Length: 106
Image (tube, rainbow, N blue to C red; front, side, top):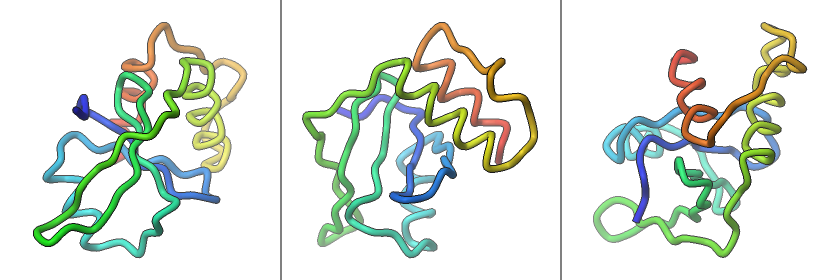
């Protein structure tokens, strides 16, 4: 079961999109051109593949669960792509706080 909020990671892109709810994600998926290699990452670090379903979308958990270090690396890449802050200062005590740091990007 997905633990919200989450980040949506487009494959091959450093950008991370903060998603506060399944409704917000569904609306973004309706508006975006996305690929089956894109991933949803919840606050526990669990990765989900996104599939189209008869009514909306379904989210399939993958074996991969990202560590705090891996999530921090993704956030650093995201911030570096914006050239808005010094990425070496980006550190988090938890995955939840790493994901919540992206809430202000929207």
